[in-house]
Image (cartoon, rainbow over all chains, first blue to last red; front, side, top):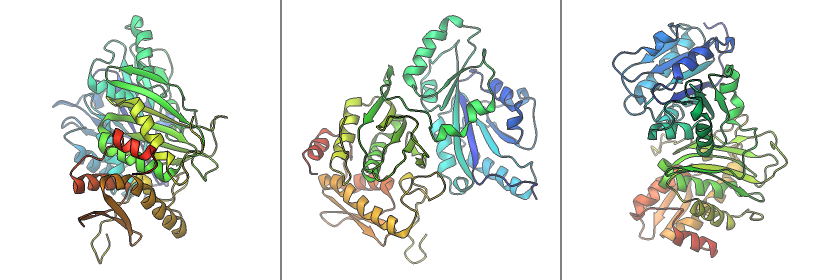
Length: 327
Length: 109
């Protein structure tokens, strides 16, 4: 039997980032943190021969390598099976009881299917929950590929790497990352000491930080913007609207994140979605600041901000509990 | 799954999140759940009317979505609702459709 009780829902953290952006190096640093001593690691590598796990300097029974290809498109079933296998072994006491699982995806992976696997699988969703998503971006190569734009958009934490190799690109990249994902805290791997708590802090899933109400930015067809609504809104009508939006445009809603002033609730509700996937809404214990407006941050690809705002206001305007006042 | 009718329990949808600490849901007790289902039918109907569709509660476990000509689909939750609506009507149900927005702004659908 395991000598301790694992958490009811084991957090699953994803480390993503384009090829060569420093994911494994970051993971190696993080695993040296005693706080991650009871962490299982699952590595997906693109290519026939997996190397990254050797670089980590730790090969044990709670480290699983999925070397058969890109996690996003070929082996989602394999990912689910690997996590279930780890879970079964933990229950039987065959592996050290881990309290966290870190998945390092291949550089080409679209993060959405990985996140979706954890939440959609009937077994996994009763034992695991999604933790923060960490995206590495290297200053040398920047965001030249569509995959890397999507990886930045879904991030809860951004880590800029190799700024020592290309210091001249730092300011430009910072600006770009802020435009694409205005809310995610930005860390610098070459200059800062980064600990597990900085990147895997669970507070990120229940955003206690205030969301910006005025964020704006774009890069190509990808646009980030924030909407703010005065007054309490009708939760049910909001659900009708968001499910309808994601059904039709989910692939282009790279990220939606918000703090809502819900009619009938004294404290705010946090919503958090990546494409078609929406996490269970978090009932926050308190407002993060004095602002009582509902605030929603969208990162969209090719959708019109004005249409989204007008649509949401139109839906809420006729709801039973409506929108007490419109900003 | 219901043993009598074979309807699958979708479960896991964010609009029907299971009650647990820290999660916002109206799934905490039967009265609240029932009230939410009634409210949900009313809210969705405001939009579905635009497409000539009607929604009703079914056994407090699923919803029945019907066209004017009687074609029906059983849906588990709001997330399933829209793909079923598109299947029944054969047209996209787009919340960004200016005509739908104008109808809602005018107070009807």
